[in-house]
Length: 482
Ligand code: UD1
Ligand code: CA
Image (tube, rainbow, N blue to C red):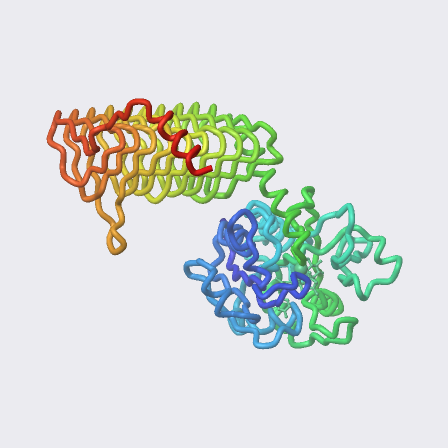
């Protein structure tokens, strides 16, 4: 997306002291993914030649959690500040006649498009400013050091404030802890996202000092250093300030998560999904929705979940890494994980479906039914209080209330096969491995341990005894005792 030489550096070495956590800050999750995942996604969207991630605090943990093909890690042994972090990576852009994009790893809401626009803005500055158009080809305005993305925050507290001259060039960036009361009034703040001309950045990094309130090497100081040499940094002020929000504590994490959720819900709502009480709905990055899907309150859609046209998800359902077909109804309080529900099926209320279960077209899986690693055929019903695990169930089968596949013998899992049109009486225990034939019937309350042939009845039950007048006899027995 960026058509000039660019190396990206993502800063992720900090401890995140304000999180008060054993877990490194950038691994705290936003909608189910480590916050740094989003930053990296946007950075990679513009396709830099190289992406470097500066890690330090609990680096092994961070490296293991980041799934970033082709990214390289740079180790910052001591976290002496953002300037020091970039300094640590400097060998990667030594003698590089291109640009360096720097992004804080704790800014997950930045959009790839915005990074792309920043590149375009920089190109315009470098090529055109002060140049006459005949010789612009190959021309580089040597007075441009780079750009910084900024925004105006309703409450700028905690951010570096942007001080500019009358020509809109950045004079310096002042951190909250170093700012005068007047400077604190400024609400245009530093996003922590910059693009600098690599040779300028490289030499300015050598000159950084740590004489400030936090005794840190501030990356922002390179701007002032370069300005004094007549090399200027410009601002790209973006209209949506939420993109630059940094996450320094758990409250900010929650705030950012809500904003991201709202973005996704806005996107899908405008693409034809109805959300009832959208504030209560959780929806993650990899979710994909067709049109005319209807979702009620407190639903969580997680991981790679796809929901096809006309499907309704009632309140309080969780659906994770699953594929839901067309015109399916998932009734309230159901939990579906790593499974597939085919067109027209009805699931729930209070159903649990997990571990590669496949529910066939128009099947009905009712209340308090758990289905694990099983295939349920078309139009098959299991409407009440049932456990089906490691089973293969055909079409038009009826599973009576309370049926259980006894699939585990304490050592191994075994398979239950129930063929088309079989009728499983209520409270049947199917001791696996076992096969129930086509149109076979099991009597209620039977413990089935042997295969049942097609069309046969299997019944395993003692003859019912009738003892006349038993109630009277029982009463007398107690009277004697008293
Ligand atoms: C920084 C900016 C501030 C800006 C804000 C935007 C500086 C000096 N300040 O402040 O102007 O408004 O971001 O969110 O740059 N990191 C390292 N190594 C270190 C220190 C930090 O890799 O030695 C990483 C952190 O993991 C983090 C990022 O750099 O991802 C930013 O560090 P942080 O301490 O959060 O900076 P802020 O105080 O937020
Ligand atoms: Ca920060």
